[in-house]
Image 1: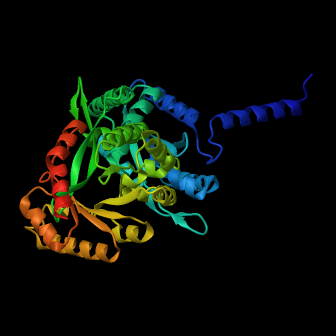
Image 2: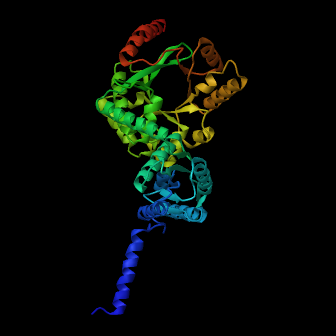
Image 3: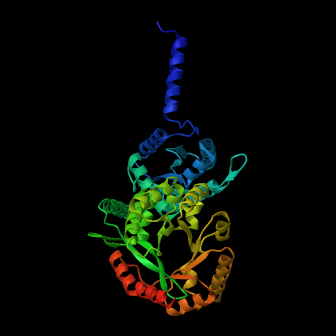
Length: 454
């Protein structure tokens, strides 16, 4: 016969196991099971009068790069500090849980409608934006939010979670620190994005993404010195899809590498037909500058195609190098060591332009079209361009002015001492065949004329 002490021991063990099944071991918060239990409880209590309540999901922005940079123990410490803050500020009767990785969730029995959910999200966003103490350093993070209101966004926990995740995904697409409350319109928008994603994946697999080329010229004589490769997608069902739509989508959904590798291969193959003195300019995404394998992948593609790395220029933005500076440093160093040149794109529109010039080694600066388009109408833009040109001269950096659309802008930039230009005034993006025709009509005659006069 089992003794009472043994019975008590089994009871304790059972309670401990049950607690473990409902608790996140790292933070001590509840987990998904605890959330489901809370939702079932509220639903049962309100069965006769189904008053609304809200669930929400919070996801830390760019947590993975910080975790990679400082280590998993520092990442765990941040997650525990997040949990402590959330537990301290949620309303009475509400629940906060931790799900996978850097994702936290809320059950909010007394939030009934959109405005209250957004207000709660704003409060939590402020709480999470304060610095996190890691002993010898402080780290700042933002968070994105998705909310779903019962019963409009779902009638059980799984439906509500799915709706909240849809809202969260929309927040992530809009940038950092965004708040979205689920609605049917948002669901349709996300459905279209999913359909677009599948079509894009199929287009990559079937090699249906095209590359067009826009000329970059020397402003001293208007002669072509290179081309920038630009992605183009004309889908059978969807028609023309802007790269401003499908490139960020590929980055968000995690297959920008496949898209970029396809585009670089096609661009390099086309550029083999150009005169060897012409360079190929190609854009790198922020995701690629956070991937240590990027430099090896690029050089491998060039090797397979037989394209000289010295003819390749890679364009990166300030925003791209801010994601994971150490990894970006290594990628840039490896590529420059192989002969690839690096351009800083959209110069003047970021938050730390001068700091980037100090911290990274670039070969070229591209002045953003926002300044170029107003060079003849806005004295401030003219003086900013003058300052950029003077600085680049001192740093021995080449300069390209983007977005030149008329003769007057080209003349002004040449007068100020800008070396190169790009824009519709010199040529619109064109496919590989049209680019070769452009070279035969514009480049070869000029090049021959120059050699004869020399």
